[in-house]
Image 1 (cartoon, rainbow, N blue to C red):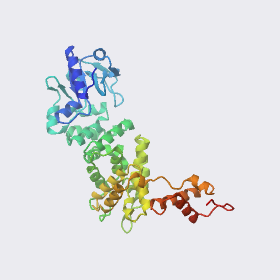
Image 2: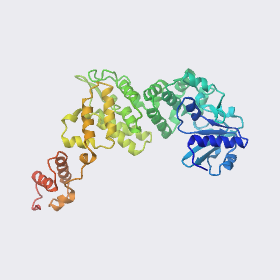
Image 3: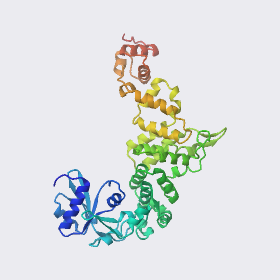
Image 4: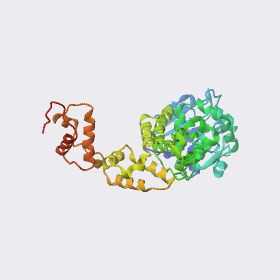
Length: 446
């Protein structure tokens, strides 16, 4: 088979199935996105053909969900899931039906799906849209509405509650009153969903657009308290008005989420959790204080992200973002070596953007941000992290004995190098000799 785009492959699959006498349509999210004028992320096909019939037409295809009638068809880099029309039996685990029945009627396939805007079918040969559930009207009105009885849909698959919020946030839609009421009633059932599935939905809410709206809906539905009680605890936690005229910690965080523009996963999580340490460190003396909230928040962020099964690399980056977000207040007073070490942290661009948002959504003083941004842009990697002039081997060769002081010696030599005080190995070793006494009874090499 020749190489295709995903769209071209999906249209080809539908055409082939129809030529062999099978009903077949583009289905689900790709139809929704096409009608909204958006580029679909992927394409799915729904058909009356049984899985074995699909495989017979596309020999390179493979079954990926035989129980549910799903076949994956690939051509080059493109891939499309082809699913047989089905109806579902009872759900036992809040995720999957115990059994399915393959069907020939597309109406039965649509009515077991989650939301009306995802229940549309499109014949790409004629551009005819099949709408059995009012999805086109809900697209025009900007409404997320469960198909059929909302409680039934959410009891079948509890993750649909988070998906409703994700779609509302991404598209700027409202959630139908009955659908939102059902989420509020059943929000506790989200605890039965695996941490990995919850994590993936949260990341999408944070990064696909409308993050503030998403978290407002999580809060209104009761899901926020279930999934992220540490974030829910931000509500009502006052801040010093001279630094935060915008309001409490929750309002400040929502404003920062609103300011995100196509963020990375870790930046979005850093924004969400940068002040998570404020509620447990809140105190009032001469003024409102949050002593060591960055350090406390970094530890909390690690616990939260570990609980949600984030990969270690993401956890380390978010921990660094939270732990270091207050360091920008001291940048104009830092030694050159300290500032360079700060700027050579992994993915420092994320630290910069977090600080910019933090300032822009509070006191609006961006002087330190501009200062560091200029320094960072002017300093290539070789300046921030140059090859060391003095190494441990150099110290040994000079007569020093490896031990606890080695780190201090190397640090002193690197500080001087970063600040431009030494420019050669010999100058670096001379500095070390001037600061550190030789071991007793040892003559240092010249």
